[in-house]
Structures are given as C-alpha cells and as structure tokens.
Length: 449
Image (cartoon, rainbow, N blue to C red; front, side, top):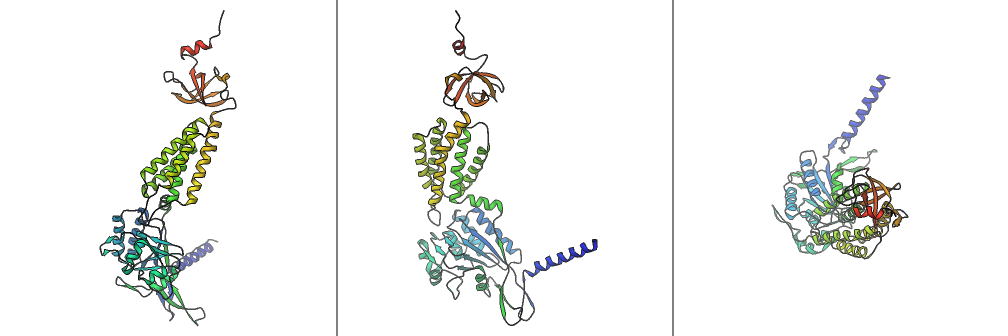
C-alpha cells in the first residue's frame, strides 16, 4: 500500500508539471516546439485612482522582471481622479518601459474617457472592440516625449467621442486590422503577432498541426490575467461614486440611530465602518465641500425629530437638503461630470426616508418606552441604575429599561436605588433615594394632622 501511494504521488506530480510547462508551449508545423512567452493582461476598470495607477506600475515592473513579452491593458474607464502630475508619471513609465505595452478598450460597450483615453496615445499598441468609444480627453498631458497626441484626431477627441470605426478612420489607433475592430483579446494577440516594438519582435501566435495532421491551427500565446487584490479591490470599489454615496448616507444614518440607543451596538459598528469607507471615497473622488456640509446638516435636522419620535418639519427639511447635497456632491473629473445614477439616488433617498420617517422613531419608542409612557403614576416609582448616570444613563423600573437623566450634583452609581421625580418625553428624571433635592422630598411627604 505504501509503494502504491508513492507511485500515485509521483504520477500526480508529473501530471502537474506537464500541465504547468504545457501551458506556454505549442507545437510547430514541422513537429518541433516553440516556447511562446506569455502576455500579461491587466484590468483597468472604473475611475483611475491611485490604486489603479500603482497596480499598472507594479504590472510593468513584474513583467520586466519575468518572461512576459508584452502587457495588454484592458481598459473600461470614464476617466482619472488623480492629479495630472501623477498621470504624467504613469505615462512616462509606460513610454520608458522595456517591454511593449498595448491598450485594448473592451469588451463591447466599454468606454475610455479623459486620461483613460490618453492611455491609447502613449501605449505602443492600441485597439478597440466593436461598440466601444473613446474621447473627452480634455487637456492633453505632457510626457517625456512631448504632449500626448492622437495625430489628426487630437482636436476632435478633446470634446467629443469616437467609436472604433471612426477612431480607425481618423488615425487615432496604433493597431489597424482588416475588420472594423478587435472584438476579443484573442484577436488582439493575433493582430500583435510579428510587430517590431522597442527592439523586440512579438511572437504571440504560432501555427500548429491538427490532430489529423491535415490542417494548420493558429494558437495564441498564453495570457496571464492580473486583477486587484481583495483589499485593493474593496478600496477601489468604495471610491466609486454610487458606493461612496451609499456608504456615506447609510453610515451617518446608523450613527444617528446608535446615538439614541444605549451603549454601542451592531448599528454603531456597522455605521462607523460605512463612514470610514465612505470617507475614503470622498478623499479620492472630486467632491464639493459645500454639498458635503449640506448632507451633514440634513442628518442633524433628521435626528431632531427622531428624538421626539414623530416626523415633523425638520424631517421634511432634512430630506430636501439631503436631496440637494446628494445631487451636487460630485464635480467633474478629467473625463467629464460625475453624476449619481437616478437608480442610486432614488434608492438612497427611499431608504433614508423610510428609516427616519418610519423605522427610527418606532424603534426608539420601542427601546425606551412602554404602553404606559407619560402616565403620571410613574412619578414616585423606585428602581435601580443600570450603569453610571451622570447626568444621562439607563435605569430599570418595573423590569423595564428607560432612558434617564439626573442632576449633575447627584450622580448615580451602578445599582444605586433611585426614584422617578418627573417625566420629560421619553426620558425619566430621577433622583437618589437619599440626598436628593429637598423640594421633591417635601412634595412626597404625607400630610399629617
């Protein structure tokens, strides 16, 4: 049995090694072998922030120190949110790279606007899939090779966009094919085969014989796909306008709710996490400070009516300000104006409206009230403090927990006996059994003949 296990282990190891080396090896038409170096594919999706820029730079360094023969940047981006200086540094790194770098705008329906579109001009090879568009470049940046240029198409692309057919016709692309575009990555590899770039001749395709040996089949080089890591992907996603907006308003709403409850619960922790991710997005994206201030003020107005438990004027005013602040929160990037989609805006407004009009008031009343709230008979009832009350805290009266307030001169310790002196809304005003204000004791003394 032991020998059988050893044989099986050796067989599995041999199969794994064969699969590993076979992934980058193809067979020649004459029966020999051609080792095609792999091509690295890096996904550039969403707004180009510092995380994406660093990822592209790391991909270039990784490819230069490995066996990769080229890099393909698969772009679908509405622009950049980093400074012009930072983008120029990236462009220079692409220009000065030791290996060829190609940009492919795809798949279908992908866009490349602003500085993302300018990537096509600084890359060694550029192509587009059918249905994609590039343009709205705005001011063309400066590089070590001079100003970014699309040739005759530069003026057109500054303010408008072009599809793959028009971009090819205007000479904005560096990779021309017989068809209208490069629909998939495999076509990109086929079109790059034989190009001489930076002293290298790309060999991304090889012809191999079919199993029957009657025909030749074109095989492309192995592509190695690289995406952002888990943490980087999470931060990059949090820095997108819709996610930043939802994180911000949901986090603030949960913190407001936690403020009206006792202790620190799940709502407070989740709210704090949402605000942290939302703050990361606000620090990354171009925003209007005045609009952010309006959103914060709107939350303060909404919290006023949460305290009284009834939606009133302040709830309506808060929702109006929240809508105005949300619609004007984001300003333009280099690819154009950043706006919330109507789906995101409506979803966020409906959620906040339900939370502050229906959810929070009822939950706060349930937390700190009983069906007998406001009854005068509770004045004079005794109970104990649940934790320190100085001047706010929680008390237990008749096996129910209440929000309570005491005089700062007579703080209550955990477990100390107390008496209800008055009721203010959903808050009980309490005093210690001994050492309380003189007038309360006099009011409760029974009259004697």
